[in-house]
Length: 106
Image: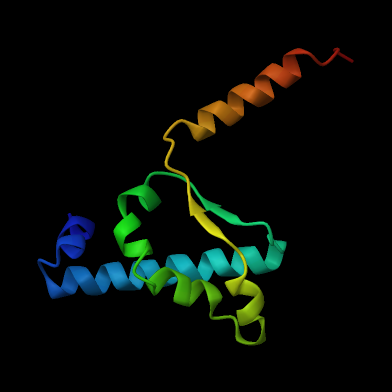
C-alpha cells in the first residue's frame, strides 16, 4: 500500500519511504556489484523490482548504485536490468535439475 501510494504521489510520507527504499536498494546493489566485480551487469530479480519499475527508472536507484567515490565511473559502466519474467527462478532450478539428472551417480 505504501509503495502504491508513493508511486501515485498520494502521500508525501509514502513518496519519502519509496525514495529511501530505492536509495538503499541501489546502494546495496552497487555494493554487491563492486564486491563481486559484476562488470557485465546486475540483474534485479524477484517480485519487488518489477512492481517498482517506475521508481527505479527515476534516477534514485542509479544515483545510489553509482555513488561509490573513486569507483563512480566504473559503476556507471555496469548495466542494470530488471528481470520481468516471474518464472526465472523456476526455469533456473529446472535447468540445474535437468543437468544433474544427466550426471552419473558416484
